Image (cartoon, rainbow, N blue to C red; front, side, top):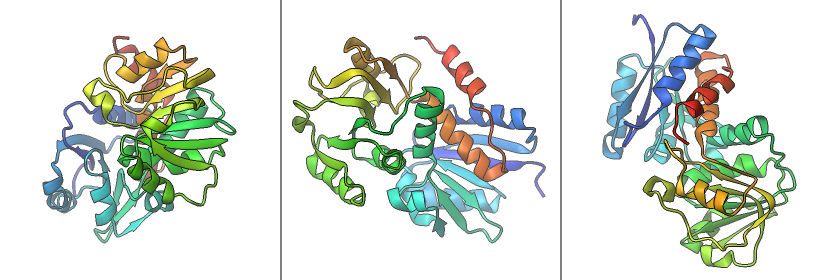
Amino acid sequence: MPDHDQYAVFGHPINHSKSPLIHRLFAEQTGQTRVKYEASDVPAEQFEARVQEFIARGGMGLNCTLPLKELAFHIAAETSSRAAQCKAVNTLVVREDGSLFGDNTDGLGLVRDLTNNLKLAIEGLDILLLGAGGAGRGILGPILECNPGSVFVANRTAEKARDLADDFDQFKRLCAGGLDELEGRRFDLILNATAASLRDDLPELPNKILNPNAVCYDLAYASKPTAFVKWARLHNASISVDGIGMLVEQAAEAFRIWCGVLPDTRPVIKMLQNERTV
């Protein structure tokens, strides 16, 4: 029997990941001394084989990041309702019989950061979601459950945005289209779920798209302000932040699923924010 409980994050690339540090801090804070968490670079074509190797070595749980979340959904024998809704999994639990249970904590992590840490009331807000890929798909359901006034999903390819909206058609205040359909619209909250920030770029946005006191949130995070965060500050957003809080909050929920205890995220978020150059 191993002398520790093995957890890991799989992704490609993975060298930038702060997850091992976050989970080490959670384990220390909650007294889960058996928890060991590491990062592994796993390309998509190796994913299933590497998961089976992890299970064979006694692994107990995995986080999956880009580009593996959709693949993780398909290998899970059972999923939570929120993972089934977005068809993506970022948290896998290895059950006693070796089968996998999949969950998605991304949307919950975002909502907790917005509401608990940034003190934002989502109900009634007009929201723009930029990007219709895996990141946007993972957060849309929990955002809609907060009863916003409206949500517009915008994507460079309008058809992809409409396909995503169709998957959530039970929500009547949801519509979608291309980036070229944003002219003349105004929003209280913009969520950037595109991959543009990873290239230090941003989607083309009209100048007068923000309502007074609007909030801008980039799901990506970096050691310095992303292009989207800088754009939002230039356009006088009342709050303009990246996704470091969401990263910590979704990790805390994964930790709770695995270990049965929810860590205090505030000191971890503060530490990560303090160590960056802003």
